[in-house]
Length: 282
Ligand code: SF4
Image (cartoon, rainbow, N blue to C red; front, side, top):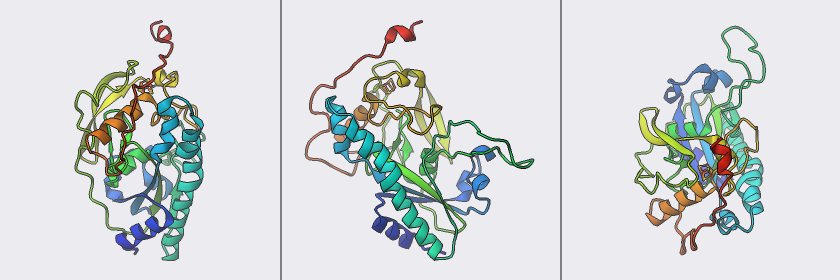
């Protein structure tokens, strides 16, 4: 079976910035509709791979003058091409060692089933895994109060994909947290009232206080939030939104992100265009 260190090195050579492994037992608490073994019944390990979103890809949105470079280098090209290629290369490495490697892109877990079950007892296709949840189980990160995946390396800035494999790979320890300290400034990053409550998430025993978010508001947010590019049922992409950028800036200023810069992300007062608040008040 592949050694975890060798696999991590191969992933690094393929371009991965983030790497973690969960053994399948860490998914025991999930329903069949969200379980890796519903896709690949012999799964023994779940490998999570990620690439950073360059901080500069957020610059145009932070200044309010260019949204395309985030859309391409932070979303579409990064996910569909650069990260996919890393995933494919790592699949090749695993399969060269004689183990099957099932690659999964980060499709929104909110998408409802699109077909009928092929047999009694099997969930209807398509089973969609929550890859942020998988990243927590694989020790790659945590879910921040703002609802985004946070990693110690890059804070909010990454795209991740997953490989299911029948190889037994030594799991990565789950992260001791928290990355985001859940202090008032981290809990107050939405100026538009979309944080409507809070709840405690528990993932494989790891507890994380997170905001309950009214995604209807986020869908009309004009602060850099983008519609889910995979499916209309998916949550909007909020990494470049005001909340995501503010969270990243706070994490960096508190020294909670390993990838350091000589200048802060937020150099000027943040611009804001309020969504149509009257729509919310109807
Ligand atoms: S996307 Fe906009 S409305 Fe939603 S939480 Fe972020 S800042 Fe608030």
